[in-house]
Amino acid sequence: MRGTYPHPTPLTGAPRSAAGRVAGAPGGIAAAAHGVRPSEDPTGEVHVARCEVCGNDYDLAFEVITAGNHHVFDSFECAIHRLAPRCEHCGCTVIGHGSQVDGRFFCCAHCARAASGTDAPVDRVG
Image (tube, rainbow, N blue to C red; front, side):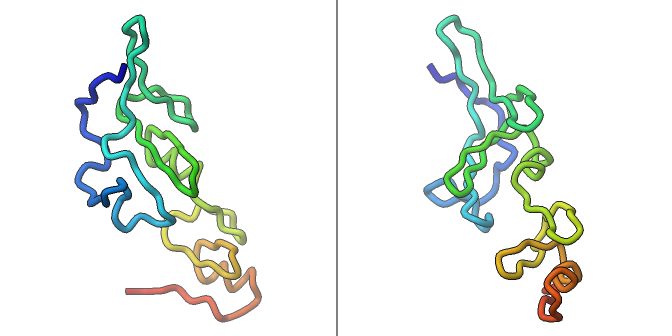
């Protein structure tokens, strides 16, 4: 039996398509319209979602579906830790747009140029 979910989702207010996709989300990322709902087992005990990175049980956890894989997180920090690509030159986490050259991810044009040996990659501004 599904329990009720009275809390607002952390993504409340983001425009969504009928499929629950967050407008403008990269890579076909979708989020549950109301977060991850707690569930009730036959004994009446309520279970909330557990973050797959830190293991925290949290009633405001949220789901991310990307490339057909379902993930549950309790914070954007954990989601970034698990899903964000790493720069192939300096190793930092690529949270923003970054640069991509031949399918390789870089945090900026500088790293892309240094790793690819070309002057072609440039940062987009504006």
